[in-house]
Length: 333
Image (cartoon, rainbow, N blue to C red; front, top):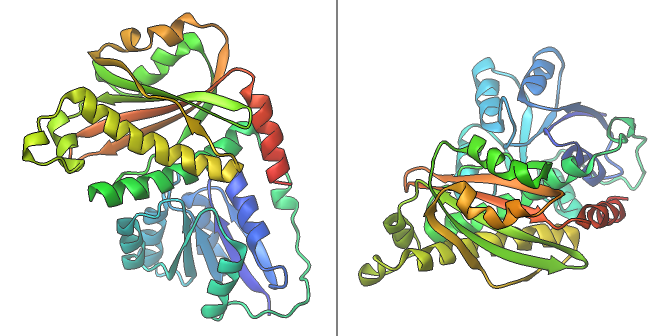
């Protein structure tokens, strides 16, 4: 009997990876949804046995889809597939009716084992015919990097949540080619704050190089010191020390997650302070003096209750885009 599945993810690369990870001998019909609204519309009018649902999506995210499924009393076996592996995220989706949580990147053997445990799949050894035309379209470098950044961000947020004991809101990474002159305007659009503190750290591995920038705005130094578990006497530690410690955690965790997916071990340079409580133009004066375009990943992080607000930027060196494309083409063949 054919199992009717629906894959809901805003990332074309994630949809392709999930289709590829399904057991080859599982008899399924596959439908795809690019966002939560598409998924709900399909569920409303077509029978679906298994829904693979991403959490971090624009317009209507996975949490809202789960809530709508409950409200509309739609019958479907939902498996959440997400890079956000924080314990609180798991608790929330379980409370909303998700049957299991699958972390990205998906491991084929683990997925097959989970499906078998729930009685959804039984190995037959006979490869099932499958139409892959829906995931055969070329995927741009920006789209691929966005999904890699999403997974790396989820891993970094999970580590940060464990270390700090706080839930990290998961934004959607933005990947784009920017002119140097556009950098300040891009950041100004992300936040209305006038003064920032910034830390910069270079990285390199397998011919792919760049720098990571972390820009803090509207952030309490005392709150960060407490989150980093400084004792009472250290709670008034110099702001620079606190900024460096927080940056080391975020830079290291994110670049480790990104490197693992690219099969690259990035080496990190010494972090340096760009400035403390300065305007963006002053913080980024070195970057603005350079010419040409660059590839940039932008991720806004927010720990609302602790008043920690920051933007992580990964800026790849000129010429790196071509190497990234070649490496991704090799890894996704």
